[in-house]
Length: 393
Image (tube, rainbow, N blue to C red; front, top):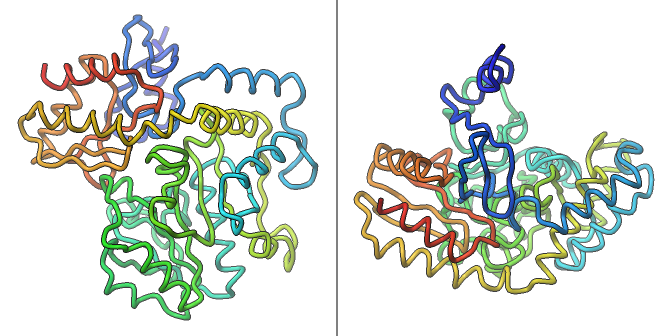
């Protein structure tokens, strides 16, 4: 009889040659347990997903309550479904008035796909400008605006008329023109290793889009929903996008994505042709119920987001005080943190050391010298102290 590990390696499509292949059987808060009973602290929230911890009681209750009513009823947009309506109303209350219409999908990649289609449909233009080292998902359209050739090359041809400029390079904003349908940018570049906008770059980007009529898409799939110390990362920078993409943490552990815009722009997907964007399972009732519960936790327990800047900064200072061998730089926007080492080998040595000590972390797709830290906002001081001890063991 095959073991679970053997079945995993034989029958589940693999994403890398050597996955950790730990068999996890339970999760709660900031912790997971494997089949042998070993406890792990999840220092990356399942890659930015479990923002209020695994299996938060309010999220679990919302899922169970909705499951007692109904599951899937009909393809998205045809029937009024309470979980979708309530989630849209909640999001609208948290966002600027110009972002008031929401299209719920199943993932961040799908949110990217919908946003790109919306921009081309609304403007009648075809050129897309994206950024080097950007990550927006792995489906074909999202891959087309990914700023990394190594991951893209085996899958060409991709979308035509996609051009790339460099993040924080103001002079390259001249590339945006009246031929440009949209510019898609992460508010904070995630897989590049937590690259923050500098010197008013996002305001300058917003201004250039306004001058040329290009729509600005901000991807907050990784940096949104409280992780940076505000509900949405763009709130730090004094701008509002034309189209916003959300995912990951939005569902509190359930699969959901969303692209959002004004009612006027979003209406362009509903005619000429009708059904300009379609999804069967987008806005699934269980996922929407979980997302609403997640947002309610974050807005009712105001200290969860309000404490992010001080809590993350204290943690960063304590890491710096350890003077860990090989650490070159630490970058962060709240609990979106990168610890950069002088070499890939030093970074992977630390990742392995932490895993042996029962701490799950990771590197970044486009920055394998940096260690990813993105814990649930609910992580305790006791758990953070244990992590710090493990860095120095």
